[in-house]
Length: 116
Image (cartoon, rainbow, N blue to C red; front, side, top):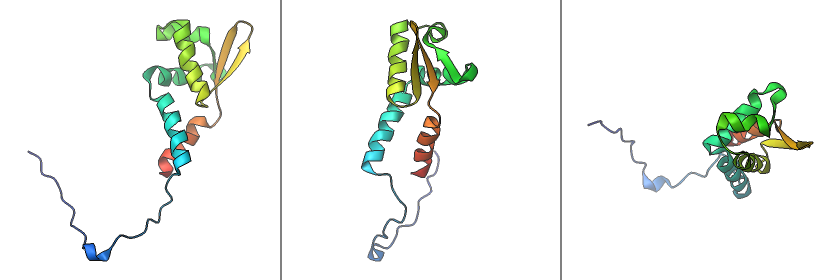
């Protein structure tokens, strides 16, 4: 059995100190939650990683299907979710769509998380 370290109780007569740290706003929290939900899927995390690993950080949907072992419609659905969340940019070329990372999108999410 492990022991649990208990912190001393604060004297309730001291009252609560006002919060001096800026907290995330309700609107920012909702936006961040939507973005994190888009990333909180193993397939989508792999897709972001695969696009980032491609030359020029750009990949055709046709290059992403086989490594994932998923059908084109399923891969396209996941890519659309990442585009809608602001992580990927989509460019149509002929019959294929090419995806690239939106510069700074992942960094902005990381900054919001670490700022909280």
